[in-house]
Image 1 (cartoon, each protein chain N blue to C red):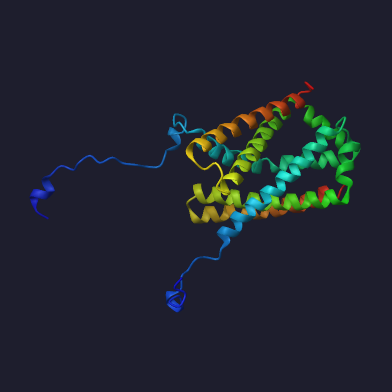
Image 2: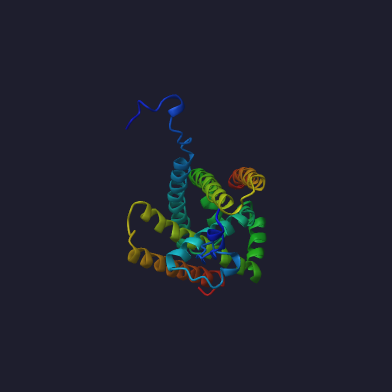
Length: 140
Length: 122
């Protein structure tokens, strides 16, 4: 290669990389993006806490004595908060999954409808979680 | 389609269709879980109080045991597809990924057996 070409300074070229973990906090996603990543996070969280949920189901069903044990566990405030978090995870995964099924069938695919249904999923899942929370903490 | 030129070394390698199969399985199991959730919540909220009698009474019925088992088995297949996607997206070293995938399958099989034990304990 000639000296002339080698001597030319390299032009600054824009570089595109995948988002880094440290950028997650100030990376603004549209509602549909939030629904998407929360769908994944809620699903993984439910997977991780599956043994706890199966254990609760077991204690609630096996006998009247184990049911009393189950009621005792659920009476703990910390457990209630964990259960509230899991309820949100389930309800979000549930609502976002139903949105997913509609979109699989080519419904509400354009940008505006996707935006609207994503907001709907976020609002409905939070509202249902509040309802579950009121029931859980004995308000009604 | 030019299927005649599709023989021997020119054969189109398009995989074992497990992509479509798992995609469809994830959706079918999702629909089963939606129905199960609605029935469970409906029963839960229509009962006057959350007592052992009403709760265990529901699970004591044979049809509900079978419905529960089918739903949970569907759930574990659904979980397998979703968690496998997560490992494939974020875990690049093949050895670590394979280990996590195998661990996931074995763990979900154990959960399935545990579910049978729970459902038939009442």
